[in-house]
Length: 299
Image (cartoon, rainbow, N blue to C red; front, side, top):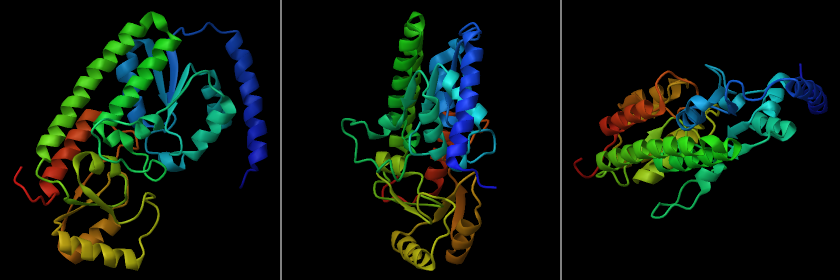
């Protein structure tokens, strides 16, 4: 059944009014600052930076696809009552709409980290096409600083704690970036074939050339013309591996690989909640890249 958008807004407004009345009768921050995040990588950031002073909830439940996530009126009410909401605008239209309706007290749009000017950085992708900036450790660190600043504004008594934790995280991310740069130092210009184009920021950071079987939307089936073009690119570049994703159907990637006599491996864009943390998944991605990329220089 299709719900009229106006009806959804009216229902959400009613729930927001109820939530506001309830909040007025409740003590504030009994369990720390209430922070809602839109999906898994941002949950990791807020937990690392916020520490025990924050309670973090994820709008994307386990197993859900953040791209198609729909939010209930009750969840919109949660956003209205939150101390902080952290998201990436343009990635999840329902979240964008919910935040507009809820008008949370403080909102951090980490898309700013995707578009920030970073000294010495190659041109990043257009975030309107590829918002996966968190796969670049340096840009992910920019978002950590955004969050630390926001939390410090909300709870200045813990400002030093937030900024100290953000500094520790930045040290980890700088080390991760150094490991990637060293491991892929001989791979400038190497062709990275992925099931969909979610790795543009990673490719830009480390000088790779990304080619997706599909575009940015993993649900779109590739055309026969795209598959023919990709086969020619793969042959010319001497590609040995096609990468598919942990949460996506690997059928198209596996079929193309079988037709061309190539192997497959996994890269995780970290869009969905998973047990391993960010640093662990990024290390696994690096191992997969080292094993599968065809590089001109020894590494």
